Image (cartoon, rainbow, N blue to C red; front, side):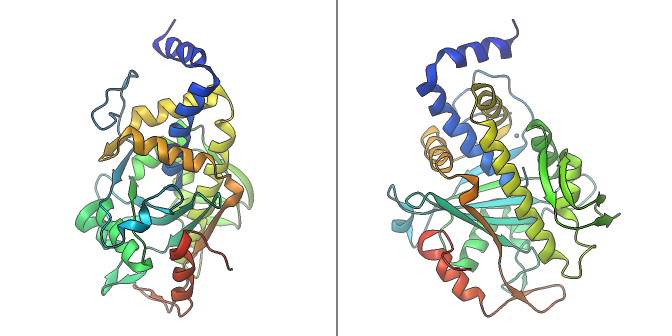
Length: 315
């Protein structure tokens, strides 16, 4: 019997309640991984009894300043920054290529994901420069300041990690909204449901040259992929085999900073209670064109709606 088979046998013997506890952690964090476009894994000093692997993603707990009272309590909304950075061999820098702010409302069992175009103007430059200057934590603070919310967690993945995560999850099926034929990203797809491996998922999420609105459409398409991945992970987590698969994927390939087992369990339980159908993906409104996109006049109202409880009540 292999190590994996022995571990799975032990997993089955833990019983339904024990598996549910572990599954909540695995599913919740796996949802976060997928949101960035869905990792030697050691949990804040806790050695995991599963062979470690390459780091696919990083999860960091941030210190919340100024409005900490809103981020505490069992019913308070939680804000998670999902960052896909463009770090890869042969390319200098590491700017945020995909930026998505997830608001989770435990009381409403709902969530909203704000899709932030990387070219959005912030303090005189593109907002994605923050990732190059201070990593995912600085990117989270920049987006949190833009929207006006305290971000508690930042999840960060690069190109190689994104590809590996999608492949590790068995791929993802996305309903492609339009023809894609872009040699820059490698996106060559027809409209309709397409099952993507990691490379195809990356190409889909990076295509901007096919669209007159460029980064705005690309950002929305990234949101489509994230929701599709969340729905797929939700289905997989309904079986013991699927739960174990997600658990090993997370424990083997996630690098955690300041995140303990209590954080993982809490985040996992929250996300487990929110069905994929209750998660909205909305691209923030921008105005103008060019290298740096200003916020549209309607952005302030949308941010205010999002700030109060982590979900959008209005269209």
